[in-house]
Length: 64
Image (cartoon, rainbow, N blue to C red; front, side, top):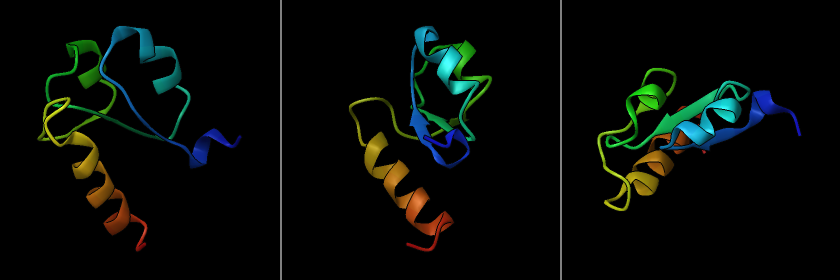
């Protein structure tokens, strides 16, 4: 898998290793501060529409 073509969404410090490997990294608004420091923070919290928000962003960014 080419990690420069992967999109990853995470909220925990346990995800930091992989977040640092992928090109496109996102997190819910309520992610841990260390995750928000390295990923694009979404407006939605986890379980409150963050995946739908990410889908919207990705489809616009990649013209899907």
